[in-house]
Length: 290
Image 1 (cartoon, rainbow, N blue to C red):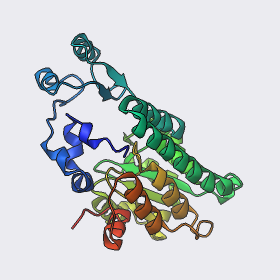
Image 2 (tube, rainbow, N blue to C red):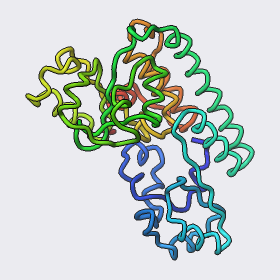
Image 3 (cartoon, rainbow, N blue to C red):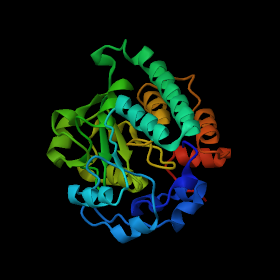
Image 4 (tube, rainbow, N blue to C red):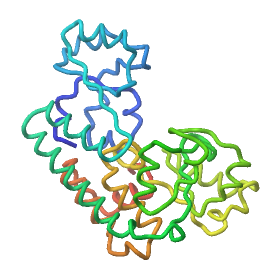
């Protein structure tokens, strides 16, 4: 996003599973992937790529491994975010690490994110609790995996004018609730966040146990868009997702938001890729490139 993809010398295996990432940044498939898990890292591969710096999550690597990497004079920068302020900090810090041009683009992105957040919250902050739909956001390979309190998912649900119904039950990402808890919550809206979102949505819509859920009966089950990365979680495309979420939760209050236009402009400006109408709609519908 900051225009420095050519500076990446190693990555994690998971990113190679994202079809839009590979389409926009095809060189990613040829890079080494020395990171298997927090405790399993091929140090020889890392050293062979001669990186100037390594960026990872705060819990991304075992402390002993980080010590071995820094002992080889490779600085390790640990970044994490679970709300929009820490997302901006992550982007700005990355820009500062990369150089002046990247730092300028990072600031520009943060201004765009702030603009979108204000656009949404200027309206949603005035909503009474009774106007806010209850929302469950699923993740993983079952509709019983949910995102609870203290997550960026909880943050955007709240800012978009909803109530994260899972927050009262669990804390963190990908936590499992029981079918009994889901039926008790009976959310107004269910948002599916997953690379296999269509499969999970189909499970929800066809499982007899879920037939009486309000969201299922009223056709209020949606799939979060998936682009370079899933929009709903820990992604630069959170700047787009807050618009999508607000429009999904309150379509009557955000009719003026044109998601096709927003996505096209974002991809052109930040990813250097001009999407067709079909490609844009595929991203918005969490579909892979053709």
